[in-house]
Image 1 (cartoon, rainbow, N blue to C red):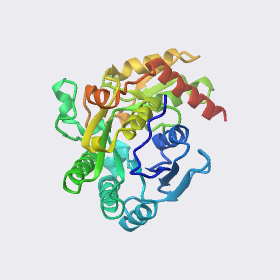
Image 2 (cartoon, rainbow, N blue to C red):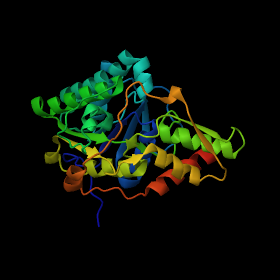
Image 3 (cartoon, rainbow, N blue to C red):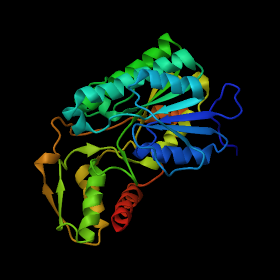
Length: 332
């Protein structure tokens, strides 16, 4: 069976561009793209230090997406077949500390990209990656959100991503750009920063196992229920959306989630059960968010219908991969 190709408007060797490619998800995506479409010309951007590893043949550029002229220059030169827009300030606590910078990167950066594509490469298809956090207050209904649920963001990160999501839709309608909006729910895996909840647990467990930390694990709110995916499942969703024909790039939004909500406490208990040590847990007020929601639930029927995507990794597999990654990092 042939691997579906990203539509290329007659170009035999597609040009694929990933913004924010040096981040957690970007690194996984670039590796997957190199394997899935080895004939493609693969390009990625990073805000500061350019990675010195990754797949052979990936060409890197330093880019601040909030600098319009530089974004325009890259798009004019590359004229990508497909862009996956990952570049963002994605840490919620940081967004409260630096809201203006968060908006500058997340909204202005997306606007710059949309403008550059409109002016210099209108045949490019764009996969704009958003966040489940954009739904915010809609989760309070207790029902699984669909793509038609209101965007009611509760923090600067979510608000800036919601604005970028709406801007992408507007450009698809008013300028005819080929856009899909991915609304990814929580995901984790090897390489994720410990500022995020599950890596924070896994890194502490790995330190406890090595005797570098007392056998007490500090936590935030454990009662919140979240929908978590392994990062590899999210990458497969992006690849499936990239493979859709151009006529299906009309501004559609797709939830990317497991469809199952799990209490953070249950995830922590499963991680601790994978440990070689007996561990206590302790609530740390500093890990509490200023605004939080009790339960996140997603309807994923839209992406299942459109792209045939469903997650394949189990929760235990996801957690073990994460914990083993931290064990290896600390051992190195």
